Image 1: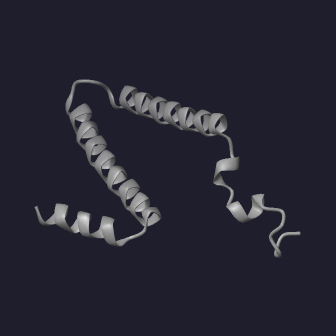
Image 2: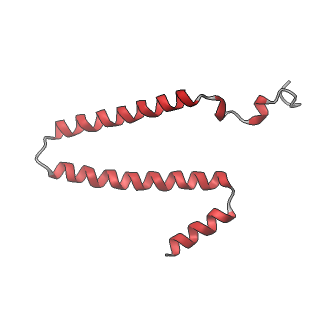
Length: 93
């Protein structure tokens, strides 16, 4: 319960960009924990280690490619600061 209160306090007191980074860290830790539990269960099964590693590698490559395609479709113009888009800015003639 204290973690929820701490998260709420941090969420309200920090700017939105810091909250987004903290959320990304939390989701990454959650997925890593779930992945490690699934990996231990897979090794406890009767499948061979070679088959498990091939499946793991294929899954990692698939999700990397899926993320790359998603970034291409979204476009890179969303990642540039607004000052670069504004040509009247004194630092960027």
